Length: 247
Image (cartoon, rainbow, N blue to C red; front, top):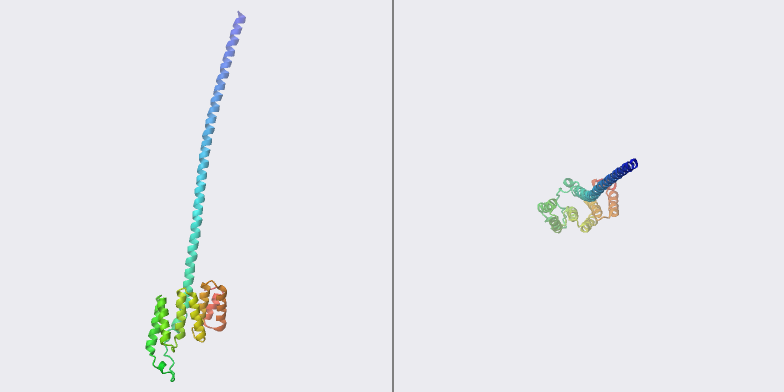
């Protein structure tokens, strides 16, 4: 009887232990399943974060590229504007050096007894024709200025203003950016009237044309020749400043 009771008690204890072990195993499985679920959720969040970072990285890279392009474009625009300002400043200096002092002096042509045609010249009409041609240049009508000065040269070949008229023809072509024709016009002045007051200006204009054409060596040589041939003139001082890298 005692043995039967003992066996029954042992069986009950074993069954309880087995159930407890089973319950512990289920709880462990649930914990593992929960951890797996949390791990899956974490991996999903991590994947989303990586995707977001990648997308943002692409957007940032694109934005940086666009900013670089904008900066390059703005630098280019600044260089263009600076070049325009420099060109305009140079033209102003070329065009109006001692203009009032040396170009508005309208003196009658030298009257030679042996040249009756020159004696018949009208100084007033001559002065008006020169001023009209120069005014066309001043207001920017360069083609009209060239035509007017050429007509002046044909009408008043004995005028003391012929070398100045030839200079303004060259300068008008310079303003039109026809640098080769401008150089040819100024070289004609230097060949025909080497002692003219406009000869230094003609050489300075030739140097400007050469610089605009990208021939820095020729421009420098012309400036050096100008300083040597016409020392002490205001234009020679400008040439020195250019040679020194100043404007």
